Amino acid sequence: MTYETFLSLILNETQNLAGKDVSVSVQKTVKNNGVFLDSLSIRKASSSIAPAICLDPYYEEAESGTPMEAIARQILELAAQQSMFPPRLDSWLRDFSQVKTQIAFRLVSARENETLLSSVPHVPFLDLALIFYVIVEQQRDGQTTLLIHHEHAKLWNTDAGGLYQLACSNTPLLLPAKITPLEQIIASLSPDIPMFQTDEITPAGLNQEEGAFPLHVLTNSAGLHGAACILYPRILKNFAELVKDDVYILPSSIHEVLLTPVSSSPSVQELNQIVSEINELDVPAEDRLSNHIYCYSPLEDQIFIPSCPSSASASSGIWNPQ
Image (cartoon, rainbow, N blue to C red; front, side, top):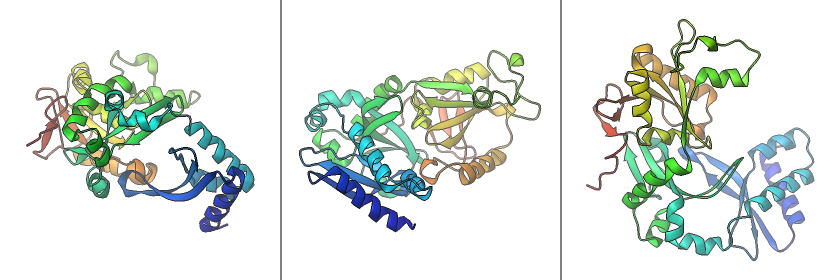
């Protein structure tokens, strides 16, 4: 079955099951880094809310032999769950006094998102950009969010500077950061495979196999867009004080970064190669943040690109209205 055939069949099957009072259509959804994914938009006639269900995993199910009717029912069930927003969502979104406590930021590549950045308020940060979104709802298995466009900022009579100030206060509270030794994560995923002698780990959790260099994973409580945690107040400074060193930041994805002490690490060139290879082999295009590392200096409280003079404060001064 070709992908185009699948799109046609699942559209017709879902529309038939949903009934005449529901509008079903295939839409292109823009993801990070200019990646477009096909989604099924499902809107009831009485509602202004239209959940968009990504179709990629369902195409895999169809390829595996799952009947189209069964797939359509799964999609409708998921759409029904996503429609359970707070009552009168439209009026809620128009009331900035309520929305402003739910505004957060995320980090994306500036170069790979030029088209997106032209339509949303954002704050440049080195070769990255901070964009803003509203957390409508948080569940155990994910979030319901709304990306903030220029139209929203105009409606709320604010701009990138105002959104940045709100997001700086909200994001660490809504999505607290967490730092975990990589070896601990690997051990939890593969408890039967001996990876490291965990009884020999120092309090800082830094001693690993001979020849390896210590890595810690920094993300947020949801595990979504956790790379933005590098901009939380004192997160990097506290880690640097713990390891008593400057810190290299390896952007493993938009969802997390790896931290390692500079003096225990390979060269910048080697680390850049590691990041580039991981991106190419293991990270979906829409989840990539950068192909090179960053460095944090606790003395100057700055993040910068190694061998590059550009830098920005990790706790203040990122936004400059001039």
